[in-house]
Length: 179
Image (cartoon, rainbow, N blue to C red; front, side, top):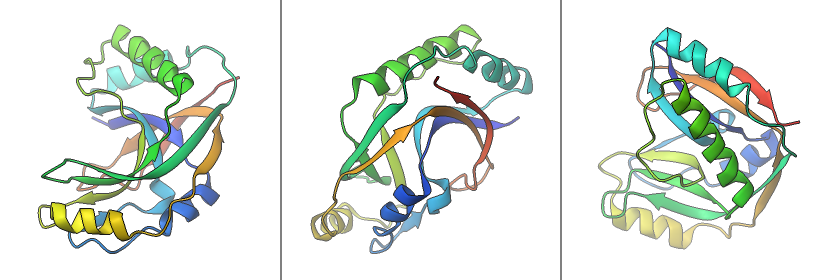
């Protein structure tokens, strides 16, 4: 059973800029810059037949113009129990439309509905229990200034992940260009 997710791949120069923020939080497992991505939909472990159906269905994403993406700051998920450090994605109705279309397509072929609200981001680190809220807050308050990072996404990718802590390295199984 493959562990699958879809996302937008991050250009190497944006990955290099994000890598400047690595380090400084005890209990952080930093994502390798080559594995940075903007997740659109996490499917988890899926049977091989559903994986094939998802791949075929994703090819039906309607043609669209390349998508401008802006990363505009650092944040964390988890509140009092932080679990991830991330780069935020600025509000983008075109990205939300892409994600919603993809959700409809994937549910049509049998994927379970996504229960979490779509919050576009790029995960920089996964945080273990010893990454305290205080340490994360201090990191965020003392991190160097985050200048907005902009890139143009030109495709959706279907990625597979190893069954392991942290998932990476990720493999691009298929790509679906926008235009």
